[in-house]
Length: 313
Ligand code: GDP
Ligand code: MG
Image (tube, rainbow, N blue to C red; front, side, top):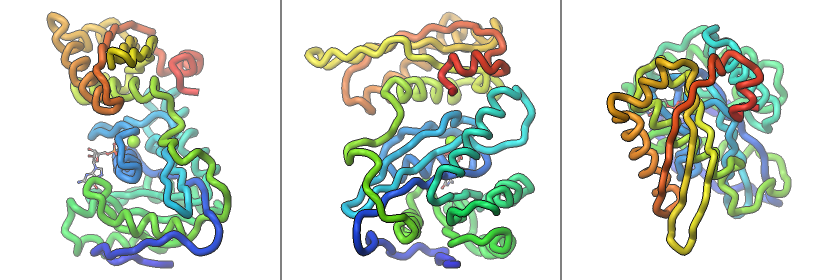
């Protein structure tokens, strides 16, 4: 097992003969920083991040290229035990676990800032019978005194046969070279899975929907984000006018939630729209016209069929 130094050093270099390629699943509890790492690795914000748990719902692929290798990262929903709203929760856990089945390498993330708990331990134990090598990432090292890391490392190192333990800060891009270096050492030889200019397997519509959902999460209270899904109904580019027209529907579970999202005098939906429009403009480098509406689909997050209809399949 390699234990990377807590102070990151320069690592790197793609491996020797032949092209290498493979899939790396990033899994762990909600909120440890998986999506932040995913975005840092890809140099673009594809996956939404927030302080509120259970932000990521789908498995999202991101393609990282170097001259001699291609790494396909899989961002996953946080694994959790909460039994609230069973349907969507179950879907998200299944999504995360099946990503780890499909991957060549599994990166399990814990955070340096919180106590390592039973859920973290359970996730790691659950990987014990996997054949793929496991890298343990300890994230958010920027937020702790580095002397706290050693006891944490001591506590976790015996839990599994980790190929290596890498302390990182996804937010400040520390330890990323070491992480990528470890992956390169483990990747099988093989051809690229995606053309070099592919950034993600998600459609532009999906990314737009996720940007809108992120703004809802940012601007509303804890309870509401979980009940929200966004479907992009129209996505039309007018290249001559350098204008992208987007219409989207925000689905909520109850009438009262619809009122909250719209806000007094339509104030909140307007703020959500403005914030989302700005991010969409940056992402697509174009002017954006964004039309948002809010609809109630009763208890959609508890029902397999509506979960599917809203794009979580
Ligand atoms: P996920 O649920 O595991 O995908 O977590 P997110 O990527 O959405 O991040 C959860 C929260 O942790 C967000 O508020 C991030 O800004 C924060 N975060 C992520 N990585 C770091 C890090 O390296 N350092 C610090 N201080 N915060 C981080
Ligand atoms: Mg996430």
